[in-house]
Length: 122
Ligand SMILES: [Zn+2]
Image (cartoon, rainbow, N blue to C red; front, side, top):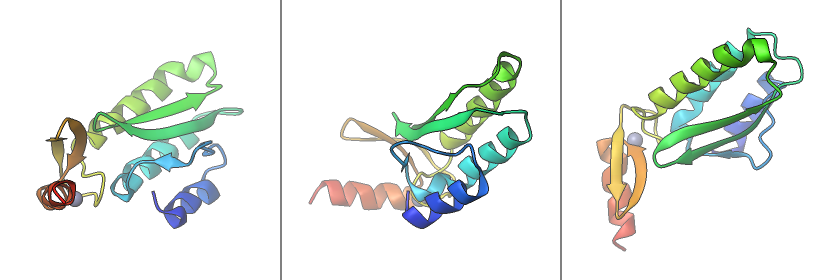
């Protein structure tokens, strides 16, 4: 994710402190913003987002120190974000589907898929 977008999330949400930065494209910014907004409405004292990354085309979120009473709610918020990431282009945020780029999975729209394919053929 671009540093400006990542900084915007860090400024907005105190618990948003991914150790290795946000390891996905800018297209998922809106999903992450919504995820953090929902989490911030819960009592999350001490909780931290440790990582956000793309794996097999979907968004993985690592949230630590969630109190037991919040666990179920936090989990369903994270699962919702994952479901949205599987239908949102990771590069541009338009509707996307899971693509197989020579065995490497990514959720992309038609345009970004075509661009990625042509780059992979260079
Ligand atoms: Zn796209």
